[in-house]
Amino acid sequence: MSNIIERTDVVIVGAGFTGLSAALDFQRAGIDCLVLEARARVGGRVEAKPNGLGELIDSGGQFLCQDMPELMALAKARGKTFVATHVEGDFITHPPMSVEQAERTYVTAMAIRERMNAIEPDDPSIAGLTVATWLEHQKDTPDAKAAFRSMIEGLWCLALDKVPLWYLIDNDRRITNEVPELQYSLRETMQSLAEDIAGDLGQGLRLNAPVTRIEHGPQGVRAVTAGGVVEARAALVALPPATAAKLEFTPALPENVAKALGVWESGAVLKILVRYARPFWRERDWSGMVMWRDLPGLFACDTGKDAEHAALTVFVGGPLALRWHELGAAQLRAQVAARLVDALGPDAAGIVDFSVRDWTHDRWSGGAYSDLIVDVTARDAERTILAGVPPVYFAASEVSPSFPGYVEGAIVAGRIAAGKVQSAIATSASGS
Ligand SMILES: Cc1cc2nc3c(=O)[nH]c(=O)nc-3n(C[C@H](O)[C@H](O)[C@H](O)COP(=O)(O)OP(=O)(O)OC[C@H]3O[C@@H](n4cnc5c(N)ncnc54)[C@H](O)[C@@H]3O)c2cc1C
Image (cartoon, rainbow, N blue to C red; front, side):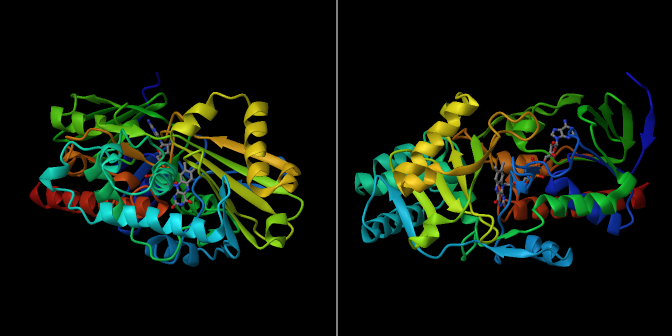
């Protein structure tokens, strides 16, 4: 191991939107910082890669909506082109239902979600309950419960019997958009925003630099990578909790903090872009949105950026993603194509390009949109993580007060953490 030692004010671990937005705030405040990123690129769970046609596509986080103020402001400030998602037309369910029936089922599933969110997370009568146990005791029809389960497993990407009810309520209450979250994507890709910030950071960012250990004490921190050591006054660990739990700390983290990081589990998601020669579903007045009632966690929507780029994005979330993760590439493609043909007819077989990003068990970010708490007793986990072990601080989209599990949440979490670290540094400077 090399023994190069560098010095900075704040070392940030992770160049996802949490780490990048914190770094930008430090830079604006004139605080020296260095971001260490494990991968060869920035963006974390936001990623762009070329499909088989050479078109750059968002293979991770992609959508934003007007109710996400930080992300909207950033995209506007960076001059991005907003592409409105095509939503006009009928929503298809499979096995088929009439449009009226499908709408009724959706409304009832949303009513279950609202009923759930009306419960106080601290209500003692729900202590120890998972979402699955609670749902079993609801008096809704099996169809409505199946639609609710599909919606939740699709959005949170974990089996409902793993997720504490109080946690889902607490988390869902922070997702406050009134317009659909799929409202826009960016023509230049969401990833281009991360690249823009990386450009501003210049030498303040290092790629291919996974941090393996953080040594910490009252005098400051040392972040250890294979290439050397970065000494700093504070460290901001901008990693999803289950990934942060894998870091080595010297001395070991206090038991309550280690436990708070250990109660999270990454979900599983596959994101698939299916390109067609023409948007045949639009010709039938279908929106391209499809929900499979027999396969919870499977969902498709129209993500064509214009008439020449007809595309459906298929999301496979939760237990279904874990099962399909085991399929080989050819089998997965056959499986998805067959499901699309079931729902949208034989035209759906005319696939021009099929591009899969399997996030399941991703080494650096966990396997889905976000990690979730899976311990019904861990009511204090987020608070404990946010308190950190100064001068080591933690932040990630997961622990954001708004839009946890979204890019917006990552920006908010990064900015709050930057403010906290900045004032801690100022206090220690004035005290020394
Ligand atoms: C398929 C998919 C689709 C999504 N769709 C949307 C969407 O449409 N809209 C939306 O708002 N959100 C979406 N999300 C969620 C959103 O992308 C995330 O919530 C957000 O990007 C998380 O940002 P973060 O910085 O907190 O974490 P991350 O992006 O996970 O960043 C953590 C960073 O730390 C790095 N790292 C890990 N370990 C180390 C280490 N030891 N040393 C150094 N670096 C390390 C990782 O490589 C990564 O770059 C999606 C996510 C996925 C996976």
